[in-house]
Length: 93
Image 1: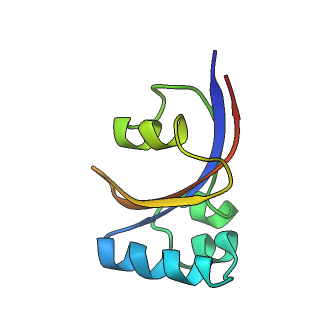
Image 2 (image 1 turned 90 degrees about the horizontal axis):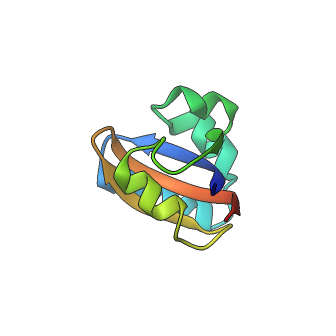
């Protein structure tokens, strides 16, 4: 079964998500941004979600994690929880 490891940053608005993505692309550390700005409890661990399989996350999140490029910051990805920046750190098929 496929598995993935990812980290994310969850914020309330698309604008905040875009702003944080620009900071990361300009050299800011993903985990430090997650600790400071993420509304998800995982923010305190740098946004790390650990390993999970398909269907364990909401559909919009799964679609990115199991299809997008590893190591890049993807988003904003809108879900019922808000807007996410997602970095896929590992994936097995």
